[in-house]
Image 1: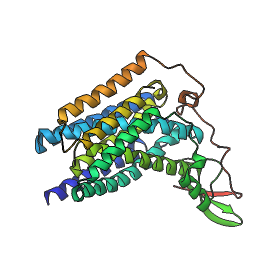
Image 2 (image 1 turned 90 degrees about the horizontal axis):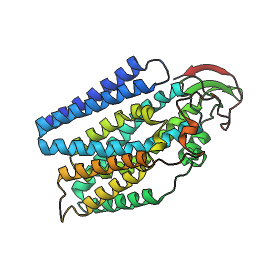
Image 3 (image 1 turned 90 degrees about the vertical axis):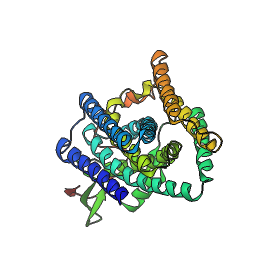
Image 4 (image 1 turned 60 degrees about the horizontal axis):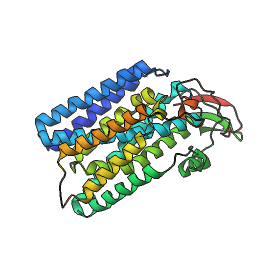
Length: 340
């Protein structure tokens, strides 16, 4: 019964935070400045560390270290999302003042999807212990692939989910404020149609789902406690929006970070594979992961990469962009009214 109230209380707290975020601080669409993003980043990290202190006090030092390590892993892997978000927003020419709305609702969806995946993963590990070896091998493979895979420009047109959305719903050729849907006359019939902002939201959701397939097994290498896995995921995801606006214009400078993230995945994958032979102390895991990430960031700054035309800075999402993506098809008809 105590566990139920713990889960309900935490989720009520998160929903209250999101309601205040959207209803008070971001009620009106605006461009998020670097200063604002930095302030929110500090706020989310402070909340996560305060929660970590509570876990340490009420659940013990082991649980406290497990939460902190899991949070660090999820926070680091979420940076990889930012690389893709920059390309998505640039491709669809999303006006900067609407990007926060996309990320906000994208995070709501991410919390629901990740919650389901965490419970499924915890159940599988509890029922079939051998599944942890599958997770471990998958993480090692993913880490090696990430280290050797070349970066490619994103092509949303090849995304099956986006193509399915366009097959089911007509999509306007321009943005209509921050609305995901509007009502237009299509073929003489007034109907609801999607805006490019909804297509972007769908792409952000599917991208996060793909990344979650890597990140959630990684945290199970640290702890199999569903509450710690879920809460560390939630706090990492909550801070993703502000981290995006803080790093979007400079993320390409950390060119060794992807290699660092690949090493983190290989490390936690190997830890899972060795779990029945040797349990790496949680303090050692935290130190190794922190060292890898700090080293990759420092190496990026000490040995900068020469800029090229494909760097995200060329499509800086924090600079104004046209509100009419020409590569989207606009259905015939006239706009009647916007629907959020």
